[in-house]
Length: 446
Image (cartoon, rainbow, N blue to C red):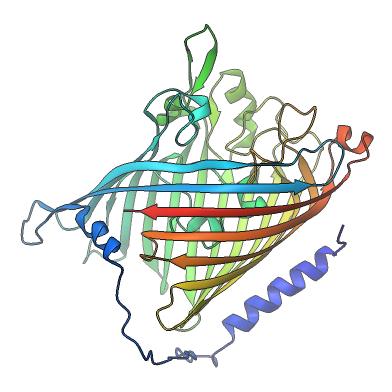
C-alpha cells in the first residue's frame, strides 16, 4: 500500500495548476501550440457517414423550428478487477454501462429542448436494468434552455432535469470523458440530475451561473412476476420539493487562449435525507452539505490537461439512505473530505485518432462502490460498498477515435490503493485495500 501524505497530494495538484495557468505572461492571451503539418490527407471512415443521418430536420430560415435531431448513446465495457484481501472477490464481465435515446429540438432561434431516456429491460440490458423491467426506465435529463443573443447581462436560463456541473470530471459528458470511469471522489459526492433551474449572468467580465434544485425524487415500488418487488427507477423522474433544496454556483476565468480556471460550489440540504429515506424516496443531492471545486482545463494543440482540487464539508451520515448513486450511508463520523484529480492526455499521429491518457486521483474519504461497483464484490458484504480513507488511483489508457466521439474504443488499467474503514474488513485483516482494474470499452453517441 502506498503512503502519500495529503500535503504532497495538494502540493502536486496546486503546482500543476499554477504551471498550466502561468504558461503565458500576465496579460498575454496567447499560448504555445505545436502545429505539426500532416503529410497525409486525413479522411473519415465510411462508417462515420451514418452519424450525419441523425438530424431529422434542419432549416435555419424557418422562424419556428430550426432543427430536430435524434440523439442517444451506447456505452458498453468489459471489466476485470484483481482485489487483495480475504473479504474481496475478483470478477470480470461485460457491462452495458449506458444506453440512452432522446431528441434535441432548436426552436424560436434562441431555445433548445433536449431530453435523454435510459433504456432497460428484464433481460439485464441497459442502464439500471437490474432495478426495473421497463423499456424506458427513467429520464436521464430533460430541459429547455434559452440563450438570448442580445439581452445583456443575461447569458442563459435553463429549466428542467439536468446535470450539476460542479466538479470538472463530472462536467464533461460521458460521451467525451477520456477515462472509462470518473474518479472515486466525483462518484461519491456528486449529485444526481435534479429538477430545477439555473440562470447565467455576465457580471464583472465573468459568467456566473446560479442554480436552485429539488433535493429528492419521487419513488415507486412495483411488483414483478414471481411476487417480488423491485424499485422502479421511473419513479425518479419527478421532483419532490418538500425535502429541502440544492443550491449551486459556477464561474470561470480565462487565463489565456489555452487555460480556463473554474470555481464551483454546491449546497445540499443533507439534514432532510432522513425524511427522504423514511418516505421511501430518493435523494437527488450530493453526499456532503458543502462541495467546493477549483479546477483548470488546458487545451494546447494535441495536449489537454484537466485538474481539480475538491473539498466536501459536513459529509452526510444519515442511516438508511439509499444514496444519490453513491450507495450506503457514512457511519464513520467523518466530517470533511479532500480530493485531487490530475488528468493529462495527448493525441498521437497527424490524424489524431490515437490518444494516450493518464490520471492521478486522490480521495481522503470516499466510497469505493463506484466506479467498479459491480466487480469489486465483498465476500459476506451484501451492501457491496465500502468507505475508504486515503484512496490513491493511478490510471493509464489508450483511446482510438474511429469517428471522433461518435464512435471510439477505449482501454485502460488503474491501480487503486487505500485503507478500508469498515469494521468488518478491519476485523478480517482486510484494512489495506489494493486493486488493479483492467477495462475495455466501446463508446458511441449520435
